[in-house]
Image (tube, rainbow, N blue to C red; front, top):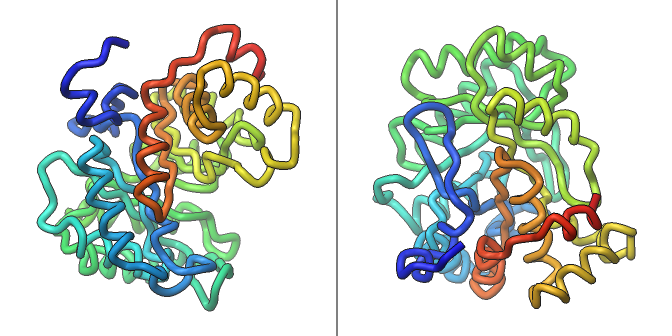
Amino acid sequence: MNDTPATSAQPARAAGTIALGSGVTVNRLGFGAMRITGAGIWGPPRDAQEAVKVLRRALELGVDFIDTADSYGPSVSEELIARALHPYPAGLVIATKGGLTRPGPDVWNRNAQPRHLREACEGSLRRLKLEQIALYQLHAPDPRVPYEASVGELVRMKEEGKIGRIGLSNVSVAEIKLAQKLTPVVSVQNRYNIADRASDGVLDYCQGQGIVFIPWAPLGSSRLAQGSGAGKALGRIAARHGVSSGQAVIAWLLARSPVILPIPGTSSVAHLEENVAAAAVHFTAEDLRELQ
């Protein structure tokens, strides 16, 4: 891809764009705002000013899709986004999620009761200072609640204007199909990275349906560091392109499917800039074969 002054100033644009349903298009490299909280995704970050700088720098780099959740902190991530970026610039899409509760650091409990989802969505609207959440995602199915009841509450909130578009997270193909009987689904967010491809089938279904697939834990750094076969191949390819392993992982995700919208997160401006620079890294067919 030829560089232009626009992509040089805003390198996230080098990844191209992707549509979140009708009427909303974003650059195909976003930012995941989970890591701007404290240890264990609990409480405020060690350096709140740096978190604000990260969010503002992301927009300067051309990122116009930010993913968060009411459970990140809890509430902290959404509050920092509003502190750093409100009033929001035109074209910025902030996606959030509801359906998990947090009794303590590193503890994630599911609660997709309709009443809880409504309270979670209304809390996100207040913290983010929004009249409507452009993309609201059910964070996870709750085995104690019929899935139709959970998704149905999101549909009601969409009809009320609180939600613009509905997404799902941590789901199977069967759960996507069940939700699609109730509402259009514009996005699915599952764990997916070069070392963990358990959601390959979900990704393939999303590609066939034109649903945006948002991989969480996209860098998968802990497993790659253990010297897996994919990690070793990635190291060779990264060296050939003169980039870091993390940048190579993001480039692989962008090449893996046109419906993938990576959202690498960080609490560091320097790491953010490194991640976004990966939008301009383009793998060859030979590279991709090595990473199969």
